Amino acid sequence: MPKETVFKSFANPAALEQDLAERIARQLQHAVDARGKASLVVSGGSTPLKLFQQLSLKAIDWSDVYITLADERWVEADAQDSNERLVREHLLQNRAANAKFRGLKNMFATPELGCDMAAESLANFPRPFDVVVLGMGNDGHTCSWFPCAAELELALSTQALCAAVNPSTAPHPRITLSKSGILNSRQIYLHLVGEQKLAVYRQALESDDVKAMPIRAVLAQHKTPVDVFWSA
Ligand SMILES: O=C(O)[C@H](O)[C@@H](O)[C@H](O)[C@H](O)COP(=O)(O)O
Image (cartoon, rainbow, N blue to C red; front, side, top):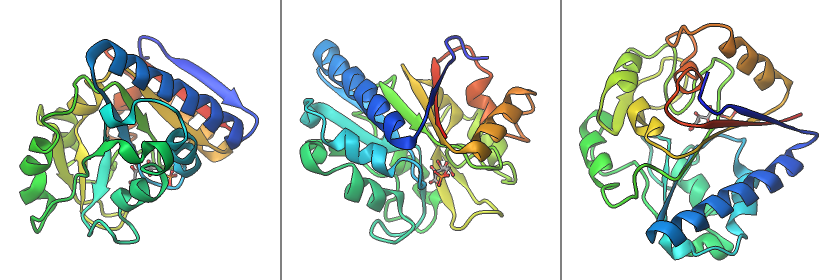
């Protein structure tokens, strides 16, 4: 289990989003006050959209906040399935429009070719990352660490910041932050909504077989605090 696991349960997603947005904003501002700038890593998917909206309204020094993605589909930045598009439309709005955003997709044809450049583009991000917000799929993936992917082992073992992944169970080639990249953080939040995600989370706690459920790479470690925020 992580060194400081907290499980917070909420009656509805709105209550969770309000609380989590407040926590993240406080931690980002604290990082800016302490070190001059802050870094935030967010996930795509459907779960965080309203959290992004809440966060975008917070009155913090957004121009000192560096934001990137936990993973990205290798599609154009304005494509429907792009996590960058999602972040631009939902997070980089209101007060957060001043944040410094760097996506992971670049001009290379494949994530394999674009991996090094994606990592280099994050060179001026404060590390450890101040806050990382992760989601989880019903197959136990987080980031783009898909159980089925041939590249999973590399994504979990490389010391490089980024890895390419070609999942057979999800659309698009992907680029993902590696396990070492994600765990080099001051705080990880796992954001889960609904009974099914709760059941998957409980299942993940039952074993340490990371290949079967890669979220275990985050849950079964002692380096970085993980707070689980779940709502019905
Ligand atoms: O780009 C992505 O898809 C993600 O970063 C991914 O890891 C996501 O967080 C989970 O698949 C949960 O997705 P939902 O929030 O849609 O359930």
